[in-house]
Image (cartoon, rainbow, N blue to C red; front, side, top):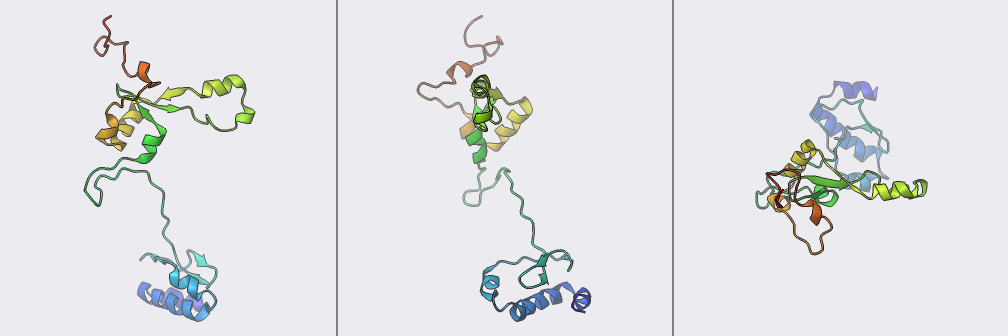
Length: 169
């Protein structure tokens, strides 16, 4: 009977009915319900999700994790760097990005000694990935970084092409 009555109600009436039902049916959980943020979509169907503690059907939005670029920050209106890119990848002086091999720190007990040594090496990202990573960082991170005793120093220039070679061929 109650579900048939809910089907006939409009969205606004349904929201009011839910709030009244929360107060009436849930004396124990009233403190929890008062502090919880409830979002109800306009296109909510009554039969989507059942909220167990109050026997009320409410649909919650699904918030998906994103790692997209902030093009306009709220404070200064500037682009922001995606911190995951800076932490996981390294940009060489000639524009290529490198990363450690996948799974290099996982399941060491099951790997042979040769495989552990092989997994310590870095691999190049392809041109599509490099372009995407360049878009995800700001100009500060696209510039070459100079460090004392840099282990990547031999790889900062590309010597195989005469147009980009620093040393004469």
